[in-house]
Length: 153
Image (cartoon, rainbow, N blue to C red; front, side):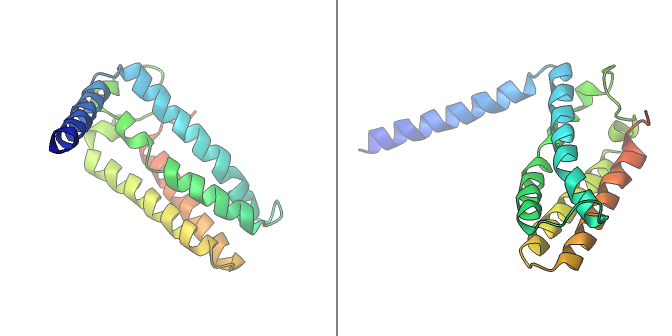
């Protein structure tokens, strides 16, 4: 029995090591595509929330809770795609500040994640005004990152 347990543990450890090694070998253009894909999905789910906060579309508590949960997962995904190996890629709108001031960039990412977590929390309260305020705060967190770390079109 101990041999089976040891073998299973060893297999898991080796598999995790291979996964980490594979991540380190991802081509820069793939990292850019991955992070851009996550950002597109964030926009897909934030757009209707912003519309609700601005009273442009009807408020829907269930949709808010679902989209907040999606954004919670998505808000944690793109950051490893801003690897220094991607700074010279051509098909990106990331400004050099992402790489020149990674601490400030990390703070912006953490602010976004905190805003999303807050939205998730208040979305379960049923307090429409609080939810709309949380959506506004999330919009500001998004805008802060776009203003400081993303090229304008």
